[in-house]
View 1 (cartoon, one colour):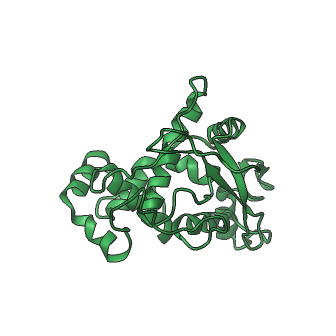
View 2 (cartoon, rainbow, N blue to C red; view 1 turned 180 degrees about the horizontal axis):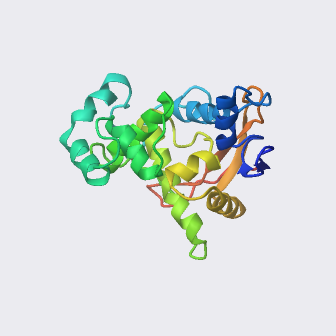
View 3 (cartoon, rainbow, N blue to C red; view 1 turned 120 degrees about the horizontal axis):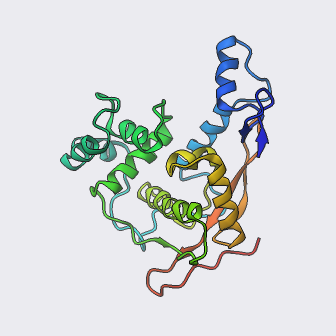
Length: 243
């Protein structure tokens, strides 16, 4: 984890998002690259199914038998009464008139902001999963031991939910994924410090494992992660490959 060169805040880049925005407003963007570049790369990774060097990134028929939710098939579900009812329950006062996925993301992350297309799609699939429009894919993560911290216990099922969401978009649950603090603090939500502590604990317990990096132009590469998946038939945990 870096510190912002301008204000000293903890940041995944040399310039935190707040200072990056201020630099852009002043007309003097930081030449070393912006937090926005990193965020765009993260959401691009989460939304595509062709980038992963260590997996097939195709629909896994053994764990999801439904249609892959893309394009018109995804957009048409905005008017499903289950979506409408759910959004009115959790986001009645948030961004009325905006798309359900936008309102849902703002309610969960506690932050209303523009969503790049890949991230918007991920929140939309999560919304459909959570309000019952689509059924739960038959994928579970390994059961955590009893002594883990509350932060790790909070984060783990939300990583499972992210894998479900990716699976609904056609990405195998066994593909590596970027689990950055910037993304997870909104997805869970929790503070970046709590996310960091939880990820370090899960890594120490070998429930997550580093699986290479993804290059970002002009920036440090993003870490990719494998997570320990449970076999739904035997109940055994998937063995992660050696580091």
